[in-house]
Every structure is written in structure tokens, then in C-alpha cells.
Length: 303
Image (tube, rainbow, N blue to C red; front, side, top):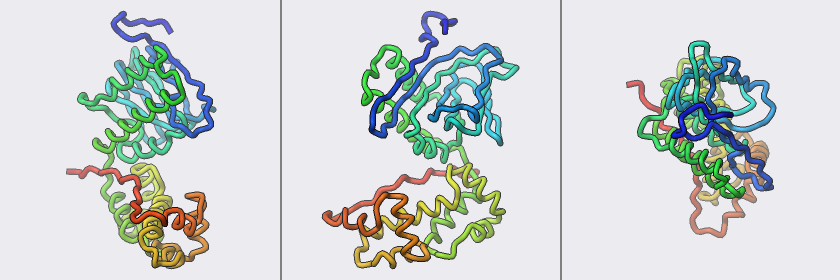
């Protein structure tokens, strides 16, 4: 694409990376800058074939990003971060003359970090003026153009470092708030060990319909309440397996809310690729084992 800006601006160009590695690395698979002036510019992520994570940052001008439930106007300092394919689209709106953007495409291995960011900020948010992330994106672009990301590992280190900084920013600047849904998560956190716990009970406890709870919980935390509960029980079981060796597998299954140990073992193996017994044995040579999990996002109050 021809650069229509002054020479002081970086070129509007793009670079793609074809990664040949058997390792499941988080990588940058494409990066570019576009000066968009055509109102034919419209991308529907529902019909795109390749699978990746897309971040598009607005340098200047105005664009539009849409999900099924919301339209996010995009102006300088705004970005959206989505999975492709996915139920979203973006375009140059009729009332905008141009839209200058910097976009980054990451491999699908980055999806867990995308979900983590969505938990705090949703799919679209604004970067504060003090953030260094825009400069980091521009540096990534400059490095790609000048062939500084010359190896798979250079590429992966750069991509992962940026995404970690973005995730850290999202956790420090949460924008989502839903008091009743937060109460629902707290209810799950406090009652996960109850084998009879179900979504009807949680919804009744916080005064929401089950449908509304599931929809809003997924919007706020990027995961369904049922899946969150299953993950929470598995996290608790890992700690007990390593730190409470006097308890049997059946006892631990009951302590974290599984109705029987056979089902617990099946779910555990599917999640971790090993049985609870094997997991415990693999770590028995350590005097102290600390089980680390992702921290939950800090949800702002409505005050």
C-alpha cells in the first residue's frame, strides 16, 4: 500500500510470518499499518477461514467494531482484540473519512491470554495516554519491517512479551463491572465443594435468571459459570493432592464437589493428561509444592 502520509510517519505496510515449528509457541503471524479511506472496507469475522487472534489499534481517524450485542466506536487510542473466526465484524463507518490502524495477528496459542484480557476489559477498550503499549506495537511493527524478528524464537519472545504486558494492563485497568455476576462468582468460590451445587441455585442466590446469569458471566469473565466451577474444583483438587497426602483420591473428589471419584478421575485426566494418582506421584519428591493458578481479575466497584 502506498504511504499517503508524510515521510515522518512509518510506512503503511504489512509483514506476514510463516512459522515452521513443532512447538506450540505463541507467535506473531502478521502485523501491518493501514490507511483506510474506502467505505467498502468491511471484515466479517464469522466467515473468515484462518484461525488466529486479531488486535487492531486505532492511531487516528474513526472506525467501528461490532459484536452481536454492542457497537464499539473506534477512535485514537482504542483497540479491539478478538478471536478469528468469531462473531464480530469491523468497518469504516459512513461518517468517517479515514481510519489509520495498526493491526497484529497472533497464533491461536495466544487464546488463553485473550480470554484473560476479556475478563477484565471485554473485547474492546481504550489505552490511557500513559500506556507504553502503543509504542511497543509500533516497535514490533518497525522490527518486523526491518527483519529484526528473524527467527521463530525472536518472534515468539516479542509476541509473548507484548501480550503479557497487555494482559497486565488489562488487569490493572479493568472496565467491566456487574455486581450480581460478581456475587455469583463469589458464591461459586464459597460453595464449590457442595456436590449438589447447580446454576439454578446460584442464579436464585443472586436474583438473576439462569439464562441471564450465563450470558453475563460469560461476557464478564470470558467463561461460562459451569466451566468456571469445573476449573475451580480442579484447581482446588490439585492443591489437595499435593498438600494433603493423607486423604485418598475419593476423599479429595468429595472435598472439591465431585459426586464420585470415577467421574473426578475422568475429568482430571481430560484436563491435565494424567490421573490424580499420577499427578500426586510426579510431585512426591519435593518437600514443598506450591500450586499456582491465574489470579482472578479485580472488578471495579460501581462507586
